[in-house]
Image (spheres, rainbow, N blue to C red):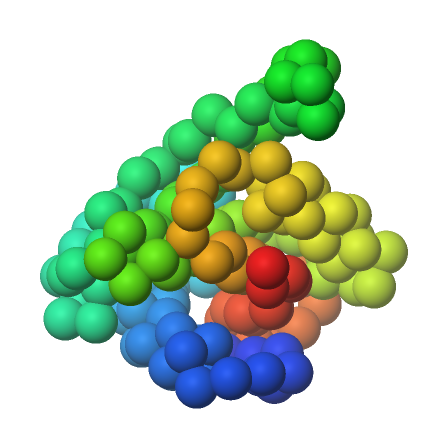
Length: 155
């Protein structure tokens, strides 16, 4: 079971999140083998369950399918997005926004599109917490890895 990680890690918190998420993602890839071609919704539900069971994420509020309003500085809402999973610990003021993809081409052009999508969520999600965005790609097409974790943006 191989999981590819983008290793541009800036601090201890992000490094620990990568490590803990690696364990959760590995478990999910074991539960949902790639030969069955599961979709993003299946991975999302299993991710939430495994995050709730993992000791490192016990202090986080875990939400899925979170609507995020895109607002201008004058609070004019011009659209919406939906984050797959948001983990937030209000005590430590840490927020992790996860964007999941399943069975997609993980080539540079698509990665840029996924990053842009996640950057909007990180920018517009309203919280006082420090936000980190991560993309998790399950069964990336044309790769031997069973999953890929990409750090997108830290605010």
